[in-house]
Every structure is written in C-alpha cells, then in structure tokens.
Image (cartoon, rainbow, N blue to C red):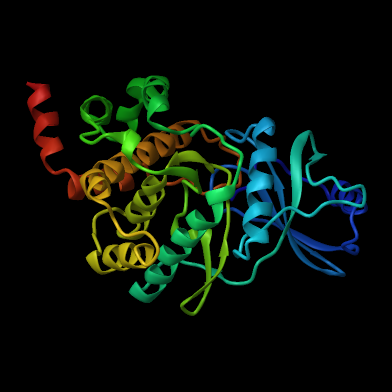
Length: 323
C-alpha cells in the first residue's frame, strides 16, 4: 500500500456520504507497498480502508478483483470485499482515480513470521485455491513470464545504477530460465500472485486476513506457492534463507494439495521465476517512483540474491557470458 494521490478531507467527506458508514472522524495515509493509494479511514460507524487505484491496476480489471473477493468471502475466507454504496455501486471515482471503500480486517501484518504462522499461511493459500475451483472468471497474469523481457528492456542499462552488472545478469537469467517440465500438465486457477507476509494478517498463529489482491490472475496454481516461498523464506535483505519457514509453508499447503511428480519437477523453476519477476518490478519502481510520493521503495536486489539459493549454477553462466 502507498499514497500517490492525496485526498482532501472535504472530498473524502463527500465520498463517504454515498455510504451508510457514518461521518468522517479521521483518515491517515498508509505508506507501505508500491501499487495504489491507501488510507485508513475512521468514521463514527467504524474503520475502513480507502483504496485509489493507480499505476499497474487498470480500471477494466477491477470487476475481476471485486468478483474474486466477493466469491472468496462467500466461501468463508478472510478477505476484504469492497463495500457497495446506497445505489449498489462498489467501484467509484475519487480525485480522478477509480476508488473503493473496503472492509477493514483485524490482525497484524507479519515482518518476521514464525514456522507456526508460515504453516497456517500455507494452509490458508491452499484453502483459497480450493475455494476458487468454481470461480468462473479469468484474467491473464499482467506480470507473467511473457512480460519480463519487455519490462527488462524498459529498465534498460539504468539497472546498472542499482548494481553494476545487473543489466547483464538479469538478461542472462531471463533468457536462461527454461521450463523443464510440461507447463500444460500443471493445474491452473485464480491465484493471488502476491501473497507476501505483509499481505497476510494474523492474530497469534491464526490467519485473520488475506489482502491486496490486485495482481490476482489466472495462472499456474503452484506459482502462487512459489511467490510465497520466495517472499517468506528469506530475511528482508534476501541474504538469509530460513529452511524452517520454507518447510512449514509447503507442509501447510500440502495439507490440501500434495505435490505431484510434475509439481516437484517444476517448483524450483517457479521460485526462480518469482524472484526474477519481483526483481524486475522492484527495479522499475526504484528507477521511476516520484520523489514526492509517500511510498516505501523496495530493494530490487533482495529478490535477486534469493536466486542464488534456488539456482546457484546460474551465476556461473552469468560469469561465463561476460567472457
């Protein structure tokens, strides 16, 4: 979450007047994340999240996201569906941006998950995948493998401003990543695609919220777990690998989805792919975030370092290609 678009108290008051949510008491911008503008809104009736959709979130995709959240909520999952106004509209306009008022969920986002929390989160992801078995809508992965070369080229040699040699290294990695299994044999469904620790809310070892579904799409089911594995099983710098967290995540997930032979064969490549995807998107944000945005930039190298755990031989190839 982040704040790119500033909303005045007057504009927010007029916005809230469309709903049966009481009167505005306070609103505070939320700086974490990089995609949308988010505010924590307190009214005389309770607490809500206001989201203004920016940057990568296209207005045409919002019906998919809203329908997915409604579907999961109806199945009993702890997700935050948008609130409809008195006319039944969930998607609004505010300060020139598509906007939604979203149900607030209790819980604390994680920064240093324990194995017990990772176990619960892995199981929650598997339950999400079970819940979408009858979800009828589809959406392509807007940050899938087919988009990486284009994003890499848009970043260009500016990648070397982040770390000397990164442009060359990422180019080799993108070209080298080979799917050594039959992708068509792996299950596909609606996935979250961004279930980092800060997108899971917990109270003690219980999951109370799965949030921030704005990369949700239709893709390989196990890629969702690969994103979790790459984001949960390392410290923030990407230098320290925590096998206990990794094992707990996969154990929790496999309570409902045991790995097939194809899953076992493809999982490491899926994890490498997740690392490349987030290295690229973070690099783009690092190079292009407005100076005056209330937003916390994320270190692109933190995910690049993770690749050494999943595919140490890749760096020998990178060095060889320099010669």
